[in-house]
Amino acid sequence: MRINPVLQKDLKTKLRGWRAPVLITCYIILLALLLLVIFAGNGMLNPYNVYGYNPRLAVDTYNILIVFQFALLFIAVPAITATSISGERERQTLDLMLVTKTHPRTIITGKVIISIAHTMLLFISSLPVLGVVFFFGGVGIADIAKLLLFYVFTAFFVASSGVFFSSLFRRNITAIITTYLFLGLVTFGPFFAYLVHLYFRETAAIAAATTYTPTYGEILAILFPSPVFGFASFFFSDSSDYYGFNLWGRVVYYIDGYLNQQTGIMRLMKPWIVNGVFSILASVLLIIASTAVLNPLKRNK
Amino acid sequence: MVVVENLTKKFNGTLAVNKLCMEIPEGEIYGFVGANGAGKTTTMRIIAGLLAPTSGRVFIKGIDIAKEPLKVKEFIGYMPDFFGVYDDLKVSEYMAFYAGLQGIYGQKCRELTDSLLELVRLSDKKEAYVDTLSRGMKQRLCLARSLIHDPEFLILDEPASGLDPRARVEMKEILKELRTMGKTVLISSHILPELSELCTSIGIIDSGRLVASGSVREITEKLSQSGIIRIKVAEKEEEAVKILMEIPEVKEISSVADDIEIKVNGGKDIYAMILKTLVRNDIPVISFHPEEGSLEAVFMKLTERSSENEN
Image (cartoon, rainbow over all chains, first blue to last red; front, side, top):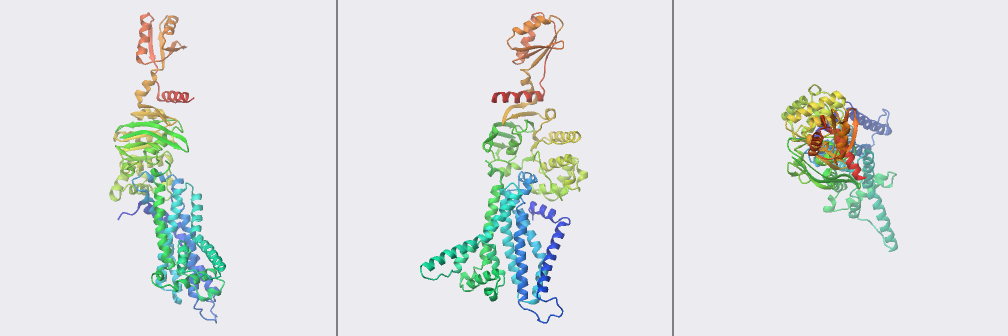
């Protein structure tokens, strides 16, 4: 099987030398330190702990670790991909690739796959740290497998966005800023749109002296593009979140509440599945658009 | 091999290439001469399929580059004037990367890499990191890269720019080897004597227009026809000047050292007529020497003319 030459070269150059192992080590140390802080905060490191084991600790720890990883995915992947094409352009190596018989699509997919591979490498390296929560129960292998799949979908979308803006703009800095702005809009925009939607529907209901309760279909129709909405499927909410100060826990509890009321096909429309499908479709479109932008004979006429 | 038809390229309304037409037959080493900003690089990038023209067409081996760009790229090797290299990549890996992009893998790739590194005299640098090479070595490596798929047509944009004299001579030797290999080459350079030595034909581009094209001899001859003739007479110099003044094609007469220097409008037949007139009038002509135009002089003359026309 022929490996994409762009992927092969980037794998070789990026994993060569001291940088990659140091980066992975730092990442795992950071996660382990986070774990230690959580355990220490719950008295788990105290040999004289008289309160015993808090069964909620495992899922709380898991929640914190996956939020940390998810945030890192959004911070790290755009930084890598948003310079993937513009960096080649700045380094004056892009023309040398485009003058070969390799289709621009192959170059683009090579750049996207390398970003996903990096993310997965970081994620898989961190599994031993995440695995600590298995000691306490509450989180299963299936949860981790589904999360891994969701991370792949999200990394695919984030990487495709970065590569698209990197193809579109000549300068690295412009590509990086626009990628973060675009991802910020896709991630938080739907939540803002949902609040606006709620405001107008509730105002209308009050004017009509009725009450308004949103349906899960409405939530889905507005929030589906947001990876944060998809991520809600993996966050373990708790009834205490409903009353507590944990805003995100409360959002997840709210979504879970609606999802649990669904029957039939709607029951399968879990946030991570719907958002995952969106991520794949959007990524394919972004790759097609990037290919068109990169194709020298289709631009600058 | 290459046919360019009415090529025009505008950048934000500015005309970079203006209805340029050219033809490069197979096996030719075609020198592309022009001042900075004349449109050389833009034309070369369009021919390489790296830039879409505003209008006009380019055919390589009869194939329209706009219609089948990937097919055409099999025949093209391109070396830009400025290019970058990757850090953390060895010379052999650099070659393997571009071989992969051209669909060449495994044993064939290794064999090609070895032979090309030998051609560009970089065999001993095979395991060196690319970013540690000197500028001249990088240029040679880039040339080897452009040859990895054995293209029939090479586009070399200022291959010797920024090189020291020694590296320039080395590059010239490699280019001569390419000529013997039967490659068709389009090469641009500012160093005109080098081009006249290396090329079989040249094209002079000015403000996006091809102002002259043909073999080096043809062009220099054509332009020297309106040039300068130095005449030496044994005696009767004043009489000779008088006779010359009566010939309408003679535009200027001056005295340089012991010679009479005249500026003539016309071709070889006019030269012959002037000499005949002098001899018939019993002027003892001991030397009649039309000055041959160098490529540099031709280039200056042509670009001067076209700027005069513009004004």
